Length: 187
Image (cartoon, rainbow, N blue to C red; front, side):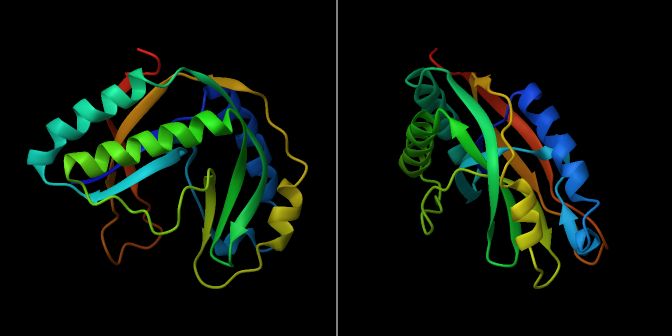
């Protein structure tokens, strides 16, 4: 199964961002983007890819230890950016150092359990808002996000998520995310 470790933003943080995303969807060119669904908004800490069923028990035990060793922390979504002309994202503020620490621990848990952890690009805390179907001019969207400063909420859980990819050839299909397990931070 295709798995990743994540933090789910607090509901107050998500609600405020949803209002800003509604504004973004009214900008020229917004129809050329595939917008992520609010129900699937998350901050990926470590992507494990396809994980054999036999690895999952050790992975979950190690992720639980990583969560216990990390205290809860504040999180806000602020500003935004883009990955080239392909993805638009909201930035992160608040407990960024704690988020990085948790990401490192989640990645180490995956490696020690035998999962194939993607470490190619390093950790860049963000929440993906939209992806371009082809090359797109994301600059107006980034400019609109520049002044966004969301409320701060508390992060108190590490979550193991299963990603169900859409079936090929289904127009507009998006991945579906299924939380499999969650552990309270700090214990």
